[in-house]
Amino acid sequence: MFDSFQYFSSIEFVFGAGRAREATDRLSSRGLGRVLMVTDPGIVAAGIAEEVEDFLVEGGITVERFTDVKSNPTVENVDAGAAALTEFGATAVIGLGGGSPIDTAKIIAAAAANNCSAHDFMTGERSIDVAGVPQIAIPTTAGSGAESAKVSVLVDHATGEKKGVFGPGTAPWITILDPELMVGMPSWLTAATGMDALSHALEAYLGVAASPFSDAIAEKGMRLVADHLETAVFDGSDLEARSALTIASALGGLAKEQSGLGILHAVAMPVGYVYDLHHGYLCAALMPATLDFNRSAVLEKTAWVARTFGVDSADDETAAGLAGATVRALNERIGMGTRLREAGVRDADHSRIVDDAMKSYLLKNNPVPGTPEGCLAVLQASL
Image (cartoon, rainbow, N blue to C red; front, side, top):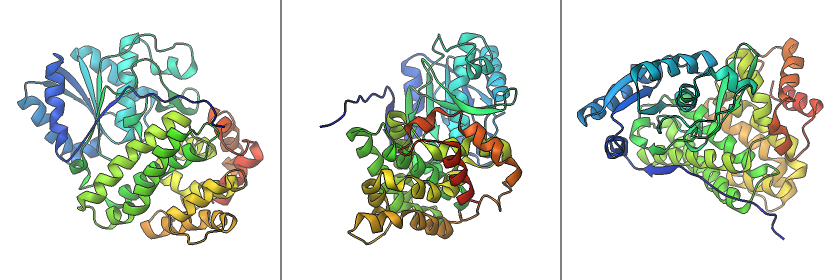
């Protein structure tokens, strides 16, 4: 018997090299002539923000640029962006960049429409009652999955938390997947974001809430990463590999949107908050231990993951037992082999990290029940 499930996505996905230019016609067709472009200094320095802004302006769109976005976006970033949106009178928002600008853009629109601080959403004092202006997501990295999801992950320094916020209108109206925008991405960032994409598909696949629909999406995403990540890392101009990872990122986002995440992300969130480490790197660092920790509860699926990444064994027990080591070897090959202790994670912070991880609703979806001991085991095995 199949368990009951549901599948829904309100986002229109547009894929193809050069198709970012279609944002102009989409905006014009709805009379949305004033756009707040939310991006970050790295995208500006790379010339991508100017490229996108130029074709928008050529098409008659008035653009205001907002770039105060950190790699782990904060309540303060959102609130400043909401003020900029209101002052400019934007009728639409474009999130251009990786997960940080896209996540920020989604909640900027919500905070402006509901006339409150993002802090109020984080604490639950306010809900997102009014949908903000329409948004277009144009990712320039392939990993976060923010382009496929309604949830945005923010840091709130007032509460010391990093967690997700979502509500009406927080999913993009259109997501444009243009692999040409990713050709110049540095190899380290390609590797980190690729492992981020893999982590979403992986945890959605192993999670309690997985369904036949989410499994199909997750499996395709993982195959694309397995087949193309190393090529993209070592030859960033390979458009086929870039295309594959662009699609894998969106599929990972859809998979996690449908069936959730687990212990990897529950632990990664507080580590990212405490040390301000790149989320994709943390996903890579914690993934081998996560596979080992969950193996007994999802043996066949763990074996499938191992085989997808090169393990040659027909025996599920044997294949599953090699899954963690196989991903660890992949990390080494693509430059993600830095262990958490080398990245600065201190023993003195373990209790705080575990305590914060235990607050995460994601642990309810983990195939092995989330406990303080389990979170500590995954953390320590990744040091």
